[in-house]
Image 1 (cartoon, rainbow, N blue to C red):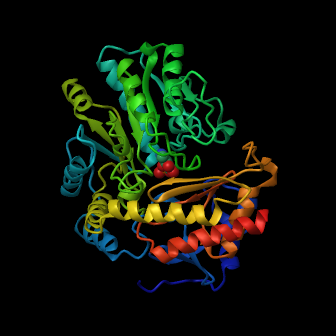
Image 2 (cartoon, rainbow, N blue to C red):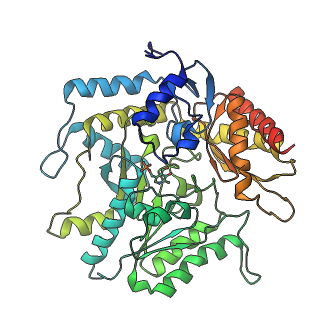
Image 3 (tube, rainbow, N blue to C red):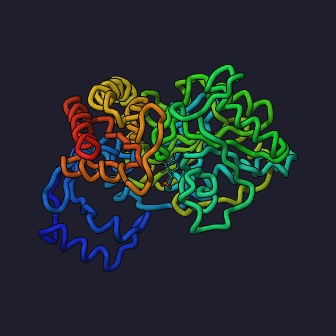
Length: 453
Ligand SMILES: Cc1ncc(COP(=O)(O)O)c(C=O)c1O
């Protein structure tokens, strides 16, 4: 790691300057009172301004799969910045790094996805897919197919359209009215989804919620269904094995585009390069961000099926959608260096093996605790759901703030992540060492016991 310059000795001095001028994502003065000021990192560890070291148990924000201190990524950015810091990516312009990146993405994404539009992150990618789905159906002569269906606890970002697709309702009230035409169905949530007696399985029943909603709204009005292969920010919800196959059938039956939001699950996190590979399902559109640069540069994008790309190309008119930073040469250079790391270090295999260990260790440390309702996960993303009563699955009262208290205890013990209510999310970098994975389980076990006995 290079030398890090810390301009003020203590964290509290930073915080005073921070609150004077900075507004943060999810801005909250009370939550910020005990904020950390992160100054350095190596591998799966990050250090605050006072020199305290923490396990980065959420890989930053699920993105930093390669960990901090990767000189290959820094060198790729530096080299590209020296050569050409920026050039337009608008139609009529391109650059070699963006071209190379699209070729590499075509090799590693689903076989039918071979065309890519690049953005600066996840929310922009959600908006791009919504706009593309609407445009596609207009070109196909079905202009009324504009509605978007997504799932409760789904997270797709917070730009206005993405926020409307996001199914975590606390994101909505401040910004109502939402855009009309967005609908949420219950997600598969194996721990909590109540299967009707006559359903063939829980997964099929949960998938059939989509069919029910399409029929309610009218198939001629529904453009797309967007879903994360494993719901991340909503509490690491792994679907049943038969869920997405049935979703694909329903989308095909009603001409609804299936959009796979791979912003967290893309590039190896779940133990496959992309999430729906687990169930052998191909989407029509994908979106990605985060781990494509391990968070070192804000880059995202959408992947478009051959069929949809053909319709766009044949339309004869330009797609009136554009971001200044689409195809950013520096972002693309960092992404290319990251794809080298993912391949050379076999992130897919690492996430499989380490993910299995992580789930086993978390279950050993927490599975028997009377307030741990479920320990779940796939690859290097796990969730520990705390409940008031294990037998009845009764939740704690939100005002008890149990998840937040557990977070405080983990921080005392040198670990940093995020909670969704009373679900503690565990998604450290894929490069995390096995001993550190064991430490994560021990620290979380001790923290849960400190709060709940
Ligand atoms: C699945 C998913 N989609 C979209 C987003 C939004 O990405 P961004 O914060 O880069 O806009 C996120 C962010 O966590 C995400 O997890």
